[in-house]
Length: 430
Image 1 (cartoon, rainbow, N blue to C red):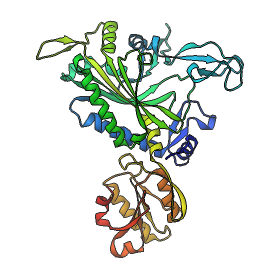
Image 2 (image 1 turned 90 degrees about the vertical axis):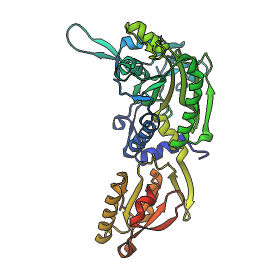
Image 3 (image 1 turned 90 degrees about the horizontal axis):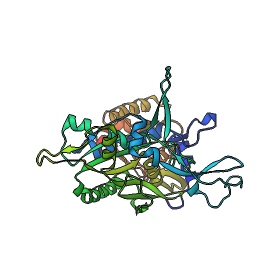
Image 4 (image 1 turned 60 degrees about the vertical axis):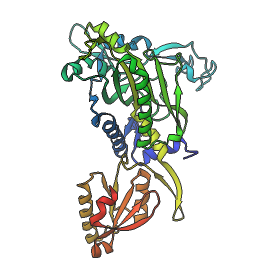
C-alpha cells in the first residue's frame, strides 16, 4: 500500500499478535523481538515454503542444522574476526554509539555532543565456554549460517558422495552485535536466515549465478512479496563482502526506504580453501569420471527470514471500505497465512449452532490444522479481526446450516459471501 508507515505496520503486528518487543515488561532489549502466535505461524509457513521449494523437492540439495556456537578457529579462518566489522562512532557526552555511515557531520544526533573518530567494531558475539579450573575457551555465536555448511562439506561428501553441482542448505539463527539496531525487524541482533551454499565447478559460476538469480525472483513472487517493489543492485567491489567476487542485492521498498532484502553472492573457493588450510583437512572434491581433484566454487543465495516476514506484511497490507466502514486487512497468500480459515457459529448462545460449528471445524482440521475458532462479539467484528491477520476465508454456521448442511463462506479480499455445501467445503477452501 502506498503511504504505509512503519509505525502503522508495527502497531498492527503487536495488536494482532505477530511481533512483540523483546523483554518488553522490563523495558525491552534493543534489537530483539518476540514472535507472537500469529507471527510464529507466518514465519514457520514461510520457512517451510522455502524448504519445500529449495530443498525437499530437489535431488541436488542436502539439508543441515549446524551448531549455533562455533570455535574461534572457524571465524579466524573465514575472515570474520578480521573483516566482519562496521565503522562506529561514540558521543563523548551521552555515550550513545552509532554506525559512522549512518550519521552526518560530527555531532551526536541524540544530544548534539561531539562524536569520536570512527573505529572498526566487530559484530561477532563472543561466548566464554567452560568454568573449570584452567580457564575458559572463547567461541562465537555464528554471525552467519554459511560456515556451518562449509565445515560440514567433507562430512556430506563422505556420507553421500554427491555429484557436482549440489548444495547444502539450512535455516536458523544468526547473531550480530549491531551498533545501532533499528527499523523493526530489519536490523536486529538476533535473526533467522535461510540459505544454501551451491557447490560448482569454477567454469560453471556465471551460468549458475544466473540460474539462481531467476529462482530468487520466482520465490519472491511465490511468497507474496510485491515484485514491483523489489530492485536488483549490483554491489561494487568496494562494498562487497571480503569473500565475494560478485554480489547482487535484492532491495525492497520498505516503509522506511529501499533496503537490502536478499543477497546472491559468488563466494569462489574462498571458504573451503581457507578452512582446508586452517584445519589441515582435505576439502577437495574428486570427480569420479575425470579423476580430477579440485576445490569447488560456491554460489550463495541468502534469504533473511525476518526481513521476509516484514516484506510480506508490507506487501499484504491493505486499507479499503467495506459495507460503508473502513477496514484493514492483510492480503496474504493462503500458503503463508497463519490461519487458513475461521469457523464460527452465528450465535454463541445457541448450543445447536455451536455444536455444528465444532463439528465442521474438526472436519476441516483433518485436512489442514490451521483452522481458527472465533465466537467472540458479533459476526462483523469477527470478520474484521480475521481480516487483520490475513485469514483467507471465514465460515459461518447459521440456522440454515441445520436445515440443508450448507454454510456461509466469506472471502477476505472481496468480502463476498456464498453458500457452500459442507461436503464441498474442503475443496472450496483448500
